[in-house]
Length: 261
Length: 350
Image (cartoon, rainbow over all chains, first blue to last red; front, top):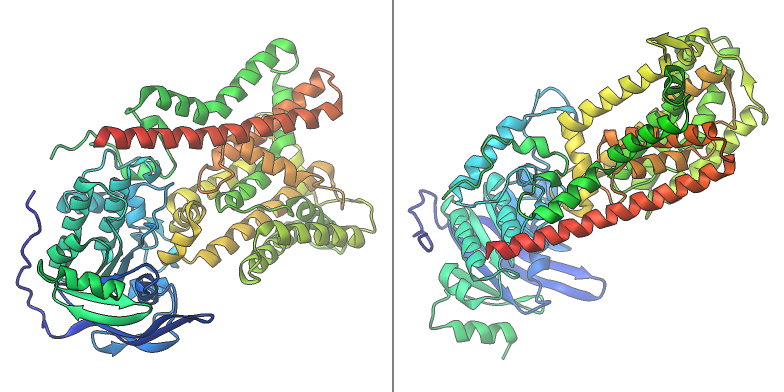
């Protein structure tokens, strides 16, 4: 397997951010989890979101994915201010999230997980819940998707509960590729994985970028940031403390930004 | 990369967990197969043993009798099963049946035609179900136990008040016909059970709604994040459970030619027991309608057998309680074995 595919030439305006967060502020009781944070992500770009535990990384992604709502600030998609009130809103707007806990349904198969909440079904004139599942179509798309991403699973008809950590992670990341149209956020996608499984997931992340998505990658792994991220944004105690292009040489600088030393 | 032998299998067939397809770890896999087939095997064994113990057991009349006696539990257990799939519980079904039967009897005596009496009973059941679902979800109650316990009491009280504490004899002939023999020596109620089972089966297996129920039961928080309308899915299962209670009331009224505030006594326990004994998981997201039906049938067979064998009536409660414990423990064991399979597969991979 080749390592990371070279970023293909995208015919999108590179200077136009697909996702922009302006002055994001979020309070939990007396705790200021986010304090006037602004970030921008462009198509075909991976932004590494770094920070120590409690720095506000997860809170920021949860506000973008509709799990939490911002107390102040704005989220702009393709330049237009967007209200994201629920996870359904976010997914509808083209924002996919790979949660740290994966949010997989253990009692469903990989294919059923891919299409959960987005089932292919008809006829269209029926209310969504009463439509009939187009199972063959979903099965076929699942096969194509997994083949394209070079993900191999022992069985497609077994429930996810029976699969290993790496396989589950791959399924969660692959799911985000099914519907991602603009933005994909991944919250520590390699945290619990071995070397080889991490590599597979990183390849998937690169594939997401190559599809033209704006990718936000939360990770603690500096190697991964240097390898994949076009820019790195560092949060500390809810505030944005720095932003730079990560290279092998400024790794130390990044680390000191994170810990605030 | 080689496809690892899943050619020819469709993803869709595994809407339900299918541990029997784990060829990876034969010993554990065999255990899982036995556990998932357990209720059917036990039911079959029970029938074989009983046919030796009592010459009367395997007669057509007795079998038809068992089906007639389990019709109400079966219908209501199917609704209960949907609720349990979503990690919930509906304690109100018994009182719901009683209230629906009383409302039906009163409307019959007020001069309503048969179809209207049936409609009123089913609507009464659905209304109680809707109250359960709406208060649970939009009243932000921590667990459906609380609201369904409340409606258990309210519906019971309402039924007793409306009927003045007594049974109200008299039902339209159309409803009574359900209790009589219809075709092949089977009572009409059996066909009602089959009809409800067919409709619910199609809804659960082929509709988006059915997939959502499994998703909500499997992982409620993830279902929210995947954009599934969890609130309405939850309300819907309580409404359907109520509908099933209404249909159960029609069957019971037909068999007894009456409505009574004392109907459905302990039906919540019987139906929960049926779902669990049948092999559905109390942890949610696992099981299918067949489990509810097999469980109901097992309860019917056990009761019938203990009667035929002249065992003390009070002993029935003990036996069914013991069976529940066995069923729940085997559910726990199944989860444990699946965990083992997962660990061993992960080991084989790396």
